[in-house]
Length: 242
Image (cartoon, rainbow, N blue to C red; front, side, top):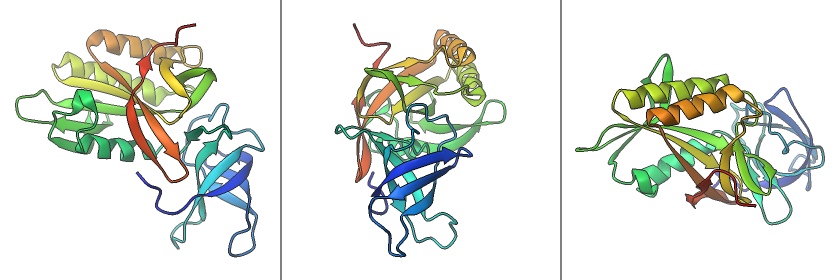
C-alpha cells in the first residue's frame, strides 16, 4: 500500500494529548513554515517511539475538512529500519492482502467483510466466508513496541479493549467458528512477537484463555519505507533464542 502523498521528513518535538505531535520540518513547507502540528493516529503509549529529536516522516494533505495538514506516519530509526505508528493503516494493508489471498492460513476464503458486528457490542475487523469452510472472525492488532533486539511485543499500554476482544474471540471459537488474532508488526527490525505480560497482565491472561479456547494467533511482518507499507510474511511467535 502506497501512501496517498509523498511523505516529508521532520524531527519530533513532542507528542501530547495522544493524538497531537509538534514537529520541525527538515525543509520549510510552501508557506515557509518549519514548526507544525501533526495528527498522530495512535491511541497507544508509543513507548520508545516518542522521544524528542526522533526523526519522523509526515504525510501532508490539502483536505479543507482537516484541521491539521500533516499526519505522523513513520518513525525513522536512521539505521535502515522504520516503524509505522498510524494504527489505522494495518487494517487497510491487511484487507488488501486478504482479498488477494496473500495471507497463507486464510487464503482459501473468498469473501472479506470488514467491521461486522459480533460479541457484546463489538465489531470484528474482518469476517471471512467461503463455501465449505467455517466462518473466520479476524481481529487485527498493530504492534510497534520493541524492548529487546528482534522482539516485538503487544500491547504497549494497558488495553481493556484488547482484553474484551480476546474474550469475544474465545466465545466465537467455543461456538464452533474460526477465530483468528493477527499481530501485524509495523516494524522492520523484528523477527519474533510475544505478549508484554508485564505491561498488561489481564490482556496476557485473556490471550492465554482465548488460545486455550481455540483462538489462532498469526504474526505478520511488514516492509516499510517512506513510499508505503506492505506485508512480507509470517513472523515467529514467542521470544527469539538467546
